Amino acid sequence: MVTETFDDDSQALAMFAWARLWSPLADTAMRAEAWSALGLPGRFDELAVDYWTAFHGPSPAVSLLLHAALARDGAAVREDWLRVMDHLGLEWQDARLPPDQLGVACEVFACAIDAGEAVLRRELTARYLLPWCTAALASLPPESPLAAVVGVFRDDLAAP
Image (cartoon, rainbow, N blue to C red; front, side, top):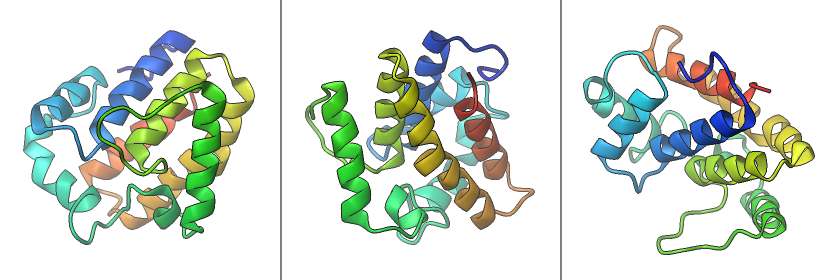
C-alpha cells in the first residue's frame, strides 16, 4: 500500500492518484488505475456504482466540495484555495472545477508537497483535508468499503 513508506515524492504521487480518484472528470478506467496504484482493497469496478452514488451522485452522501462537506462559506473556502494556487504559481488549464473540489485540492496539495511547503501542507491538512475525512467518515456506514477508502486517504494525508 502507498501508505506504508513515504518520502515526499511518493506522498506527492499518492496525492496525484487521489486527485484522479476524487475528480468527476476522470473516467472509470482512470479511477480503476488510481485505485490500483493506491493499493486500495478490492477492485474499483466492484464498487464503482456505490462510489459514484456516495461521492458524485445528485445527492451524494459525502460532498467532494470542501465548503459543502465542512458547512463553510463557499466563497471564503474557494478564495483560500485560489490563494494557495497563486502562491504555488499554479494556473488553470482546460477543464475547470471549483478550487475546493477534493480532486483539485489533492492536486494542489501534491504541488505543495513537491514545492517543500511545510506550512501549507500542515495548514491545508488541518483546515480542510482531515476535517473532510472526519465529515466523510461520519456520513458513511462504518462497515462500508468506501469508509475504508476514506480511512486510507486520511492515513496518506498524515504521512510525513
